[in-house]
Picture 1 (cartoon, rainbow, N blue to C red):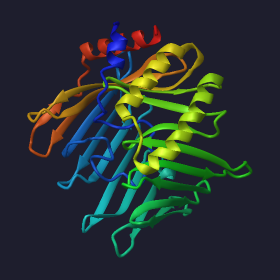
Picture 2: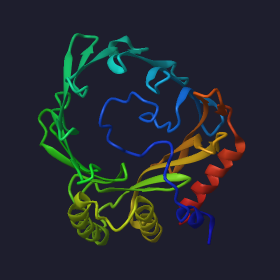
Picture 3: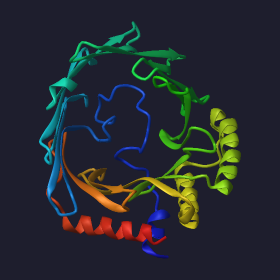
Length: 336
């Protein structure tokens, strides 16, 4: 078994972040930012393949795991973004976004109902324009989000046990035809999205060392098979009766990819490397993004994470061994 197949069949759920997962509520906690352990500070530096720093980021969280502020700087053009979050009684009530281009500056204000659920997000832009996002709930679960930014409406569907399994987003840009985007979820991660079963069909597999998303690219055999799978999913997911887990789904999807790669179109590829803390928790140490058009690694990012217990894991310095590991995985993936 070659190296890439070993990777494909050694599936462990990602501890960092899911690819393409629709954010249900404003990202306020360490988990929303992909850090599964309680952290106080995360520093990151991105490098190009010439080993030159191209972007820095610093995230700071409070003792409850809520984001306090972050600062992202693009070293290539000296542009930057700063965000500060404000809380009352552990509820986010204001976020202030500042940019190197002050015309983009904005403020988000949040309104809650008597049950503590977020019901409205008001965005005030630098030029005085105002946008609103409205959140609606059913059975104590987020049911729908309406936004006037692009006239969008997203409706969420849950199983009998309360697990999110589907979302449908309807949006209509000015002078454009209304479009429906369907998302399917398994164990909290997006596994499939499609505009229609004949276009923009994206499928995702989650592996230990990488996450891969690809477009079926009008592959008639695959789309016919997917139609049957989606019909079964819509029948069984609401009853929590699916005969497969995210792990087995990802393995089957990876096998399909390896057999049909020449007929598919890569949409997104991300590589991961991890470190462990004293309690053996996996924490992301490095991440690399692939440019799917050029089929090359676009950048590699290293993380230095400070946990709430005072432990610091990882380092933002470029690690040549990890870079070579990512290059090997990428080469193996290209040779499938």
